[in-house]
Length: 82
Image 1 (tube, rainbow, N blue to C red):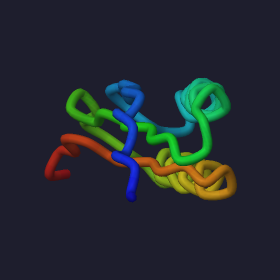
Image 2: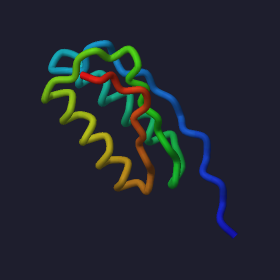
Image 3: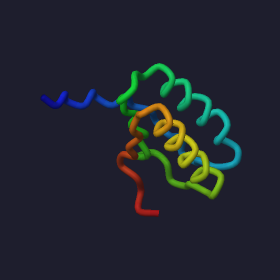
């Protein structure tokens, strides 16, 4: 019997995800991942984020890798067209 996936833990991304905001965002995301059990899910809400530069993309990839190492999943919700 398959278990139902747990409800994702939500996290709001900043309005600009880049060089100036990446460190604080990474720390907060990693802390959330560490509080989740194996198989847990982190949902990063991008609805208010209007700009992601290469540093921001890099931190999203790092968060995803950290989650994968822990058997967790990261989902991006409501990204903007840009």
